[in-house]
Image (cartoon, rainbow, N blue to C red; front, side, top):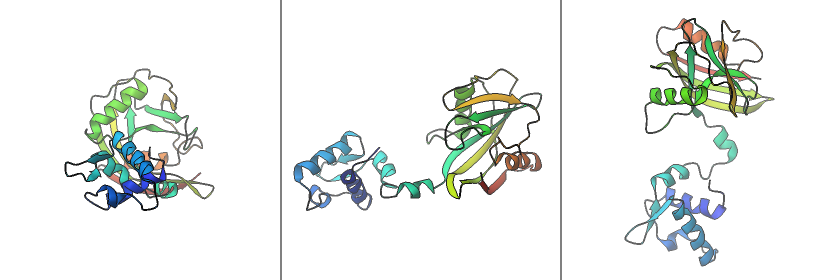
Length: 223
């Protein structure tokens, strides 16, 4: 993570240029040795690279980091976070659910979830997330829907997610019960409107049962 203001400024300047020379990057009021130190720190972290002509540019990691480098923490929070939701059922139609033991929405129950990975298909990621978090294996996942979920608590944005929901059916087996961030369990005919459920669960379950085609959901909830 890039914390120092000078490193953030270097990245920001390089975001606005394909390449730049040392003199173009260095602010006039900054000591040369200090600037060189922070430039080399970015190079050591593989955010910045030096080209044969002596100019500097962003690596692929630097380009990804530089996109949001000048944004405030609030602005980053207000951008939707991409997640995969895994709606898994057994042969008896029980649901595999997870109680969250980490913020945000600590203590609430929802589907197993994880983050998409840039260099692999989401169905492959879904299988890996399920096995890592529960120890269970699903042969096939399929995409059932997608959308946006916003959750507010005390009029403050708590989470904003851009979700893709995938479904799978697996043979009933005991899941790995608990890890640091959540505990897993099977539930037969759960009440998705219950107070301990994530507020989006009722709409997600309804969308799964009501739509034959891939659904889209755009909802805001208050805790």
